[in-house]
Length: 565
Image 1: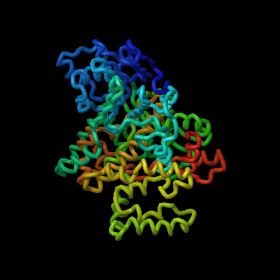
Image 2: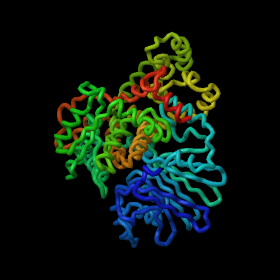
Image 3: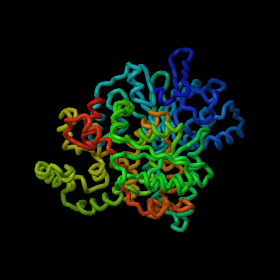
Image 4: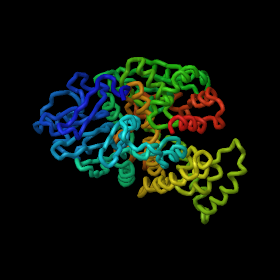
């Protein structure tokens, strides 16, 4: 895991050699040796290995000092140690940031594993009955040995279902992901207990129940957004902004400029798109100039991709059909000397920017009333699927079967291969076992249980099944491949608590996000239709390796799986 932390490494082993912690350091807050990890409390009551950032650590430190705690560093890591001593598990309600950590409580004789509410930082564990291991990467656990790496059907099937491996599964039977917003305690005798301290579904349920006043929307949204951007700029190194032609990153840049920060921006351009509607560089450059940013455009060619493709695939940790753009823009940031960059990820999930917020309710309205819909839909799919034109999406065959509720419609929209297609790409027995374990529609339904509005349901689905399982994981491995920490100001628990009531009530959208900037965004950005981020690299890979039947995402997925399985 050296790329995750090139600035230092450390280990701690207990006197009885039954507990060990290791750490690779990327120095961002308190660059001195005093911030090195694993870090021990002065009385040795706790030792921690921590990955991430606590953005409100200064306020927490002040509060702890007022209660008598003394600090020997300026790091957020030491704040975690003292906060744990002061609050125990109640500490999680106080934390604002992204984190995954392992803390050994030597007084209780317990290992504490914890992961932030959105799952921005990864945390994997393995328990073979005699030893519990945890790490920030699946590959680190595999490299350590003594872990069951036999195929996990749910992980393999889940990859082809979604284009990424859905949590909590991995490709390996013996390795799991700790759920987001969860703390796990492991005692010396191996007993595990878990507790969920934060849930996106519950946050959105509260947001639906607390209908705000529309007249307060603009001011409240601006205050919350400015507050989040300010917190995410906290660092002892320079911070850049990953700038696209979209509203999210442009808004972050505008708000960062308002705080007095000197904006530095990086945009990725693909040579094949130069001068076309898919080229974001000209718009991004105009936005950067508008806010006085020091800007750099980095062009990626097919040759650039081919030179890096093997390294890119190796660094994925778990296969994913996404993340290519994040990998190359993080590489560009590292080449410019940046350790930290802000991303606009999360705006679509909070403010309803995806087409799914419009299309899923329309589909439900169209087919949800069909009598005996599941049975009728299956019969229709069995007839239609074999006769669909080759150029048509196989999903058309499942419109009635999967279009009647939010959970099934979301699967129809986001799936890479639909369940009935999976036996054509994987062993039939593996598919049967994997689908049974995944219980995909059941779990999708559980993640929106109790929510009533279309916005809240789709926001929950997009943020937990797409943003967390794919986008955040991709941003993490891609950034850390180049020792760059990517921060996401729009994926902030405090921001969501403030903004979600307005979004769920239809009082806030992507245009509301853009209007939060005092100096308005350029008209060509405000009026630009949402296009998504196009990446020709998947087609490059298909052509360069040859013999691939499926082009695009499906062909890319087959190649990734062949290298990972």
